[in-house]
Amino acid sequence: MAHVHIVGLGLLLFIACVVAIVTRRLGQPYAIGLVAAGIALSLFGYKSGIALTPELVFTFLLPPLIFEAALHLKWHDFRREVPLVLSMAFIGTIFSALVMAAGMHALVGWGWQAAALFGALIAATDPVSVVAMMKEQHAEKRLRFLMESESLVNDGAAAVLFSLAIAWIGGSSMSAGVMALSLVTTVLGGIVCGLAVAAVLLLVAGRSDDHLVETTLTMLAAYGSFLLAEELEVSGVLATLSAGMLVTNWGTGRGITERGGEAMMRFWDFAAFLANSVVFLLIGSREGMQPLGAYFTAAAAATALVLLGRAFAVYPIAALFRRSRLATSRMTQHILFWGGLRGALALALALTAPTTLPEHDALIGVAFAVVAFSIFVQGLTVPRLLKIAARNRRED
Image 1: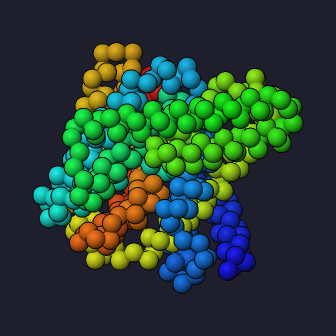
Image 2 (image 1 turned 180 degrees about the vertical axis):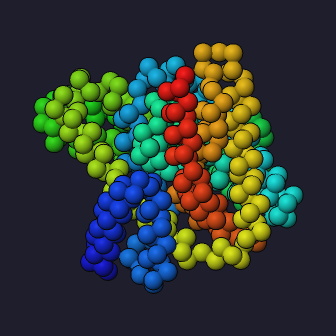
């Protein structure tokens, strides 16, 4: 069985390389090409033996993607943008979840439990999809920073909302104070885990000038911080994000040598390519097996609600900062709105939905439909918005 999985993984990586060559020559987004290839494999009946499961996404694929993105987040940029980023990541995510939960209950007729669970899992923008898109399109520096940092941070709010919805479905009742405390604990706990693990490993790295040792220790920081945080039931994404930011902002030049820093960046660029390749191919393979037509009406309503919820997360919050140094242009707000993609994170959460929910199958099918719209429709049109924004900057 293990042999079959290794062969399947090898074939997936070969297909990813071919897709990368073709899409870059055609000037199309690489991630969309991977999803399309995954759908084609599914329709032709090919099974790699590797399934898109929550365990695979959270345990193996998400940590390298988060860590690699964090290595490019500089502290001075984050400190300058933190009020705007945190407002969109937390307040915006909560607004989005409420809009979608209320809408799915009122328009589609789902029970409040399924509607709340769906709102929680689909509210946050997906770091995998957003980071891949912005990196590939070479977006303007501040816009890329805002989109990537928001998608990385808003996992904390989404994780708490999802866990609260699961607890409610299980019969628990929580006060507003307990919910707020849970949010703070999840966020701060994740940050502390990431900083602690990275700090210890950087101290060890400081004892060596071997770039292979240094790179290996950063790998342990990425996975170790994530797994420790998840074990403690705090945010694994924020833990890995914090670990990556500590490594790049404090460790490079101190615990990590210059040669080690260069080797580290090359390794994580490669690791992110591998993880992205696998996750988007598996999304496509799973999309090809979903009976999306059976949930067309619910999926259409959910897609409209996701866009409405995203609008609530962007435009009102941006308006609060319009007279400050954190003001954003109207075009930037449009790209933040339309570029808030959903992807692997939402699907992984959807696959963990309780089977006792009457809407269980519909919830998973609708989640896959929303992600398909996000990747193909939004993902294909965001590059055009970025080109318009670049042209406007040149004209100004």
